[in-house]
Image (cartoon, rainbow, N blue to C red; front, side, top):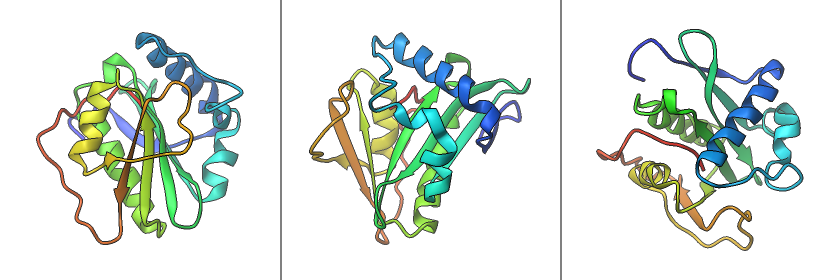
Length: 174
């Protein structure tokens, strides 16, 4: 992570409202809408949806302690997990935070014994897609995409080396 102005840390219960605000803000920036009863229902109980199920939810703070980004590893089953809720406010973009957070989530998936990572995204999130692809995520088929998503990607973790290219370090969300 470049500079010491930002830190990545684990989610705390007191972060929940701010996480929901950040996600709604970034989605709005791209003309996408939150779905409180749908794909975003996991935000009502982040600890229960992620951590209690063996996943991870990370927070990005700026140098003043303000939350400026987040992202999670959501277990789907014993072999597959999903990258979810990776969003950054404009002040956090361009600092390599997306690359750092994605690297941490992939390592957490490997440590947790997952063999495959999946994610869903929207084509308007071009920087996020470039980041995912730079780590080796490839287009994948999913039975049901979230209503705001029109693309799905997967990364096989079964011993494949993680590839990192010079893709933009900026990510706005998935």
